Image 1 (cartoon, rainbow, N blue to C red):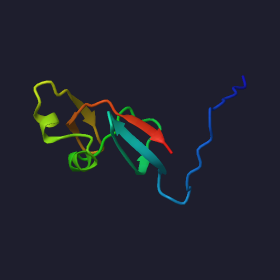
Image 2: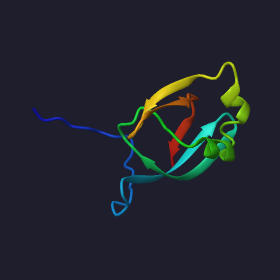
Image 3: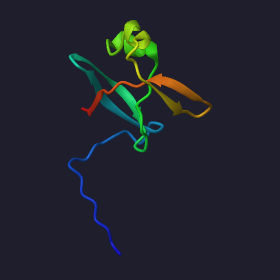
Image 4: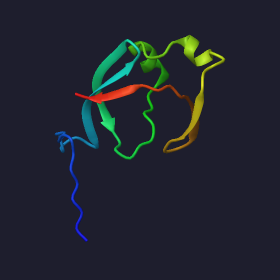
Length: 93
Protein backbone atom coordinates (compact mmCIF):
# COMPACT_ATOMS: atom_id res chain seq x y z
CA UNK A 1 0.00 0.00 0.00
CA UNK A 2 1.40 3.37 -1.02
CA UNK A 3 1.17 6.33 1.37
CA UNK A 4 1.39 10.00 0.41
CA UNK A 5 2.46 12.64 2.89
CA UNK A 6 1.80 16.32 2.47
CA UNK A 7 3.30 19.15 4.48
CA UNK A 8 2.35 22.76 4.99
CA UNK A 9 5.89 23.91 4.17
CA UNK A 10 9.35 22.55 3.42
CA UNK A 11 12.11 23.52 5.85
CA UNK A 12 15.68 23.55 4.54
CA UNK A 13 18.57 22.79 6.87
CA UNK A 14 22.31 22.24 6.46
CA UNK A 15 22.93 18.48 6.08
CA UNK A 16 26.63 19.21 6.74
CA UNK A 17 25.80 20.02 10.38
CA UNK A 18 25.47 17.20 12.92
CA UNK A 19 21.77 16.67 13.59
CA UNK A 20 19.11 19.10 12.42
CA UNK A 21 19.95 22.73 13.23
CA UNK A 22 17.24 25.33 12.57
CA UNK A 23 16.71 28.98 13.45
CA UNK A 24 13.91 28.97 16.03
CA UNK A 25 12.04 31.45 18.17
CA UNK A 26 11.00 30.58 21.74
CA UNK A 27 8.19 32.65 23.21
CA UNK A 28 6.57 32.89 26.62
CA UNK A 29 4.01 35.67 27.05
CA UNK A 30 5.71 38.84 25.77
CA UNK A 31 9.26 37.44 26.06
CA UNK A 32 10.81 36.00 22.91
CA UNK A 33 14.30 34.93 21.83
CA UNK A 34 15.70 33.76 18.48
CA UNK A 35 18.64 31.39 18.08
CA UNK A 36 19.86 28.32 16.16
CA UNK A 37 18.78 25.10 17.90
CA UNK A 38 19.17 21.37 17.48
CA UNK A 39 15.78 19.91 16.66
CA UNK A 40 14.79 16.34 17.55
CA UNK A 41 11.69 15.68 15.48
CA UNK A 42 10.62 12.85 17.78
CA UNK A 43 11.11 14.69 21.09
CA UNK A 44 8.25 15.22 23.51
CA UNK A 45 9.92 18.11 25.34
CA UNK A 46 12.16 21.10 24.67
CA UNK A 47 14.92 21.06 27.29
CA UNK A 48 17.44 23.84 27.86
CA UNK A 49 19.56 25.05 30.74
CA UNK A 50 18.04 27.16 33.50
CA UNK A 51 20.70 29.84 33.06
CA UNK A 52 19.70 30.19 29.40
CA UNK A 53 16.01 30.48 30.28
CA UNK A 54 16.85 33.25 32.75
CA UNK A 55 19.11 35.05 30.27
CA UNK A 56 16.38 34.90 27.62
CA UNK A 57 13.76 36.20 30.07
CA UNK A 58 11.71 33.00 29.75
CA UNK A 59 12.05 32.04 33.41
CA UNK A 60 12.92 33.79 36.62
CA UNK A 61 14.35 32.53 39.88
CA UNK A 62 10.87 33.02 41.35
CA UNK A 63 9.36 30.68 38.72
CA UNK A 64 11.66 27.87 39.83
CA UNK A 65 10.76 28.33 43.50
CA UNK A 66 7.07 29.15 43.13
CA UNK A 67 4.60 26.90 44.94
CA UNK A 68 2.63 26.66 41.70
CA UNK A 69 5.68 25.55 39.66
CA UNK A 70 5.16 22.20 37.99
CA UNK A 71 8.09 19.92 37.37
CA UNK A 72 8.32 17.06 34.87
CA UNK A 73 10.67 14.08 35.03
CA UNK A 74 12.50 13.89 31.70
CA UNK A 75 14.74 10.99 30.71
CA UNK A 76 17.91 12.23 29.08
CA UNK A 77 20.81 10.27 27.68
CA UNK A 78 22.53 9.57 30.99
CA UNK A 79 19.86 10.17 33.63
CA UNK A 80 16.32 11.13 34.49
CA UNK A 81 16.08 14.67 35.86
CA UNK A 82 13.29 16.89 37.10
CA UNK A 83 12.72 19.99 34.95
CA UNK A 84 10.42 22.97 35.31
CA UNK A 85 7.47 22.25 33.01
CA UNK A 86 6.47 25.51 31.40
CA UNK A 87 4.49 25.78 28.17
CA UNK A 88 6.30 27.86 25.55
CA UNK A 89 5.77 28.49 21.86
CA UNK A 90 8.44 27.30 19.43
CA UNK A 91 8.42 28.73 15.92
CA UNK A 92 10.71 27.90 13.04
CA UNK A 93 11.87 31.04 11.24
